[in-house]
Length: 398
Image (tube, rainbow, N blue to C red; front, side, top):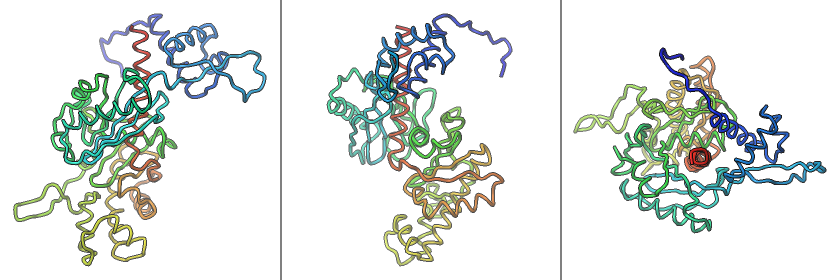
């Protein structure tokens, strides 16, 4: 969209040089090992310019010269490939019970991983645990701490894109309104990106899981809560304030009545989260004590009629959530995750049948390929790409 009065900034030689470098880097990243001539053909950039860009990439440390024995005789051609050990990022998945962390290279692959039990800890006490894990990871990988250039932290709440604070966070004490980015950055002494955990799970599925088969998809996590991450055109959609995908807000809630008034934490007939659907299940399976969704699915797989009814009700609720998002953005694929959503053998068919009746162009359905590792995988992939960007920026502005 054109803005009246907007002034265009002319491209400088430094700008063009940086754009060429990013273009060449992406081609090397995707097609390595690759020669100068092949890079020139793939990008349309002249061979002399490609040679100059390669010198920059070698100087930064992002690429290294290599051979390609698979091609036989190559007439002396030099090939290039990424150098993932040029720098590192650390990825964190902050949960109510576990703090998961991984050290990753520039290819996003885990170098080493470590977890900590954090049940009962406040948000502020997570900082010390994260610093300790980061130190352990660097030691285990035998790298200097200063080789870690960036951290990505996934948190269970809405992350304000402008100041990195966390809202709508109930699972971790003290996280509501918490200045997560500021506090993690100060403690880790590196740049930090804080992101909603379900957004990171969607990014992880796109980079390394089920979402990679579609240009646009919705990741819907159903477990103790419900959250959604949306990828359109290969880009994660966060929204103006970072609250895109908060599908609970799309429905008029119906609450449980208690002697003290309505319980606003447990919707009855809309929400597919475990707490809500277990209320329905308790009435259907009165003989079961301490009923869990794991037990419901176990009984359903054994063809218990009442449990199958609960599964059908859960499918109805999931369909409502999927239909709202699909009707607005018409995604190609919906990936189900979370403790409930991963039960695809029982849920995919009834949800798909209901969607076919609700929508003229229903999306494909799959379950998460990454399971509980989706958040950390997304944080790792994002951390690697942000670290590359940081190295490039430092090189041109240093």
